[in-house]
Amino acid sequence: MDKTLLWVRTGAAWLVALLIFFPILWLGMTAFKTELQAISVPPKFFFTPTLENFIEVQSRSDYLLYAKNSLITSVASTLLGLLIAAPAAYSMAFFQTRRTKDLLVWMLSTKMMPAVGVLIPVYVVYQQFQLLDTRLGLTIIFTMSNLPIMVWMLYSYFKDIPREILEAARMDGATLYDEFRHVILPLGIGGLASTALLCLVLSWNESFWSLNLSSAKAGTLATLIASYSSPEGLFWAKLSAASLMAIAPIIVFGWFCQKQLVQGLTFGAVK
Amino acid sequence: MSFLQLKNIEKFFGDHRAIKGVDLSIEKGEFIVFVGPSGCGKSTLLRLIAGLETIDGGNLLLDGKDITHAPSSKRDLAMVFQSYALYPHMTVAENMSFALKLAGEDKKVIKEKVEHAAEILNLTRYLERTPKALSGGQRQRVAIGRAIVRAPKVFLFDEPLSNLDAALRVQTRVEIAKLHRELGATTIYVTHDQVEAMTMADRVVVLRDGAIEQVGRPLELYDRPQNRFVAQFIGMPQMNMLPIGEFGSYAESLVRPLPVGGHIGVRPEHVTITNAGEGQLLATVDFVESLGAESLVYATTPHGVQVVSKQSVRSSVRAGDTVSLKFEQDWLHVFDADGQVVSNAKGVAK
Ligand SMILES: Nc1ncnc2c1ncn2[C@@H]1O[C@H](COP(=O)(O)OP(=O)(O)O)[C@@H](O)[C@H]1O
Ligand SMILES: [Mg+2]
Image (tube, rainbow over all chains, first blue to last red; front, top):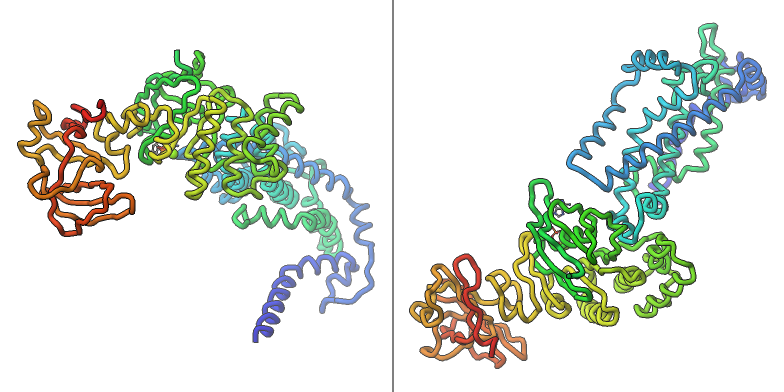
C-alpha cells in the first residue's frame, strides 16, 4: 500500500518535471536539426544531429560580443545593486521606523506595474542622456528593476541577525565599517550570495529592456535570440541554436548554484 | 566628583516619555543595581548610558568627560546582554578578543588577556569552540569574559541571569559578585529580581515609570522606604499596607497629626497572631502556608484588606479562623495620602 503510494508520487514528480523541462529539451533537440527537420510534421525524435546551425549563427552574428555584453551588464548591475541595496536593507532592518514596512511594500509594488507602461519616458530619458544601446544604460535599468527585490531579500536576511549582536559589536568598539565587515558580512554572506545570484540570473534573462534599449552595440544574448525570429521568415533551427547558446551559460551556472538559488527564492523563509 | 554622573536624563519614544529626568551619581568601583517592575525603563536607562539609544535631554558624564552624544564605540563601556549576544561565527577566543583586536592591541597581549580571563571564568577548555557548542551557563560566562578582557570603565549588565535555570542563577550571581570584589570595577546591573538587587548591590536604584523612586543601600531601602512603592517592592512577602482608617483610634497614638487618607505599613515579620483582645485588628484567616522553618498566615480584615503574618513558629490557626492581629508598634511605617513616608519604623534605629 505504502509502496504503491510512493511509486505514484515518484511518477507524478517525474511527470511534472518532464513537463516543465520539455520545452528546453525540445529546444535542445531542434538546435541540432536541419531547418527542414525542424518544421517537419509529425515531429522527428530521431535524426542525425548537425552543428550547422551553430556555425551559421556564429558567422551571421558575433555570439561572443553578445555574451560579453550579457556578462558585463548582469555582473555590473548585480554589483551596483548590492552597493545600493545592502545599506538600504541594513538601515531598514536595524533602524526600523513606523514607516519602514510601508516603504518596503511600496518598493515591491513598483514591480507590479507593467514595464511597458514606462517604456516611452525611459526611452526618451535614455535618448537625451545618450544611454541608448550602451552597456551603462542597460546596467542602470537592470539595477533599477532588480533593486526592489534585492532590498526586500536582503532586508529579510538582515532581520534574522539579532540586533543585540550588532549592539555588542558597537560596545566592543566597532565602527559602522567594522560592524559591516566583521559581523554583517560573515553572518549575512548566505543572504548576500543568494541575492546576488538571483539578480545575476534575472539580469541575464532580462529581455524587455534589452530589446527596447539596445541593439547591435550593447545588445545582450536576449537580443541575439530575438534577431532570429525576424520578419524575413522563421528559422526554427537557428533560433533554437541561438537560444541554446544564450541560455547555456546561465543553466550551467545555475546548476552549480542550485542550493543558494533555492534558498534565495524562498526569501529566507525556510531554514 | 563622581565617576559616572547622570544629570536630568530624558528619553522619549515618540510621545511616550520613557525616562523622566533621572539624576544619579555613581562612584568609582561601586556596584549599582537598577531594579523595578517590568517596563519601568531599567533597560532603557542602561542603554542610554551605553549609547545604544540617543539621549533626548540632560547630560551624561563619565570620568569628567561629557559623553552624552558620544557613540557607543567611543565610550569604553562593556555590556553583557540578556541574550548574551555572542558572535555566532566566532570561537570563544575570538569572541573575547574582538574588542582588543579592533583596538589594535598587540597579538601576544591579546592572547595573554584572553587566556587569563578564560582561566578566571573556567573557560580554558572551550576557547576553540563556537557559541553553538556551549551550554547556557558557558555562553553567559563567555559574555562576561568578553567584557572583562577589555577592562572597561564601567560594566553594564542587563538581566544577565534571566535565561539561566534557578540553581545556575544563584551560582552565577555569587560568581559575578565575587568577580566584582576582585576586579573592583564600576558596575551597573539591571534586574527585576529584588533578591539579586538586595544581595549584590552596594546601592540599589528603584525605578518606576521611568523615574527614580529611591536610591540607597539594600538594607536602607528595606528599613527606611521613602514611599509606599519602595516599601512594597522590596521584601518578600511584601509589606502589609493598611488604610489608617482600619485602626480607628489606635492610629492616633502613632502619629500626630494623622495623615488623612494615609496608610500604615508593616512587614509580615512584625505582625503576630494573638488571642482575641491582645491585638489591634480582627481578621479571618484565608489560608496558611507552612514552609517548615516559618509559616505565612494570610488573613483578611473586615474591610477586605489582606494582611500577611510571618511566624517563625508553626502556626496552629486554620483557614476560616477568626484571629487577632498584633502589630509591633516599633515597626510601623506611616505614609501620607500621596504615598510619601511620614515616619519610618522606630525599631530600625534601635
Ligand atoms: N525601542 C523602543 N520603542 C518604543 N518604546 C520602547 C522602546 N524600548 C522601550 N520602550 C518602552 O519604554 C518603556 C521601558 O522599557 P524598558 O526599558 O525595556 O523596561 P524594563 O527594562 O524596565 O522592563 C516600556 O514602556 C517600553 O514599552
Ligand atoms: Mg529590560
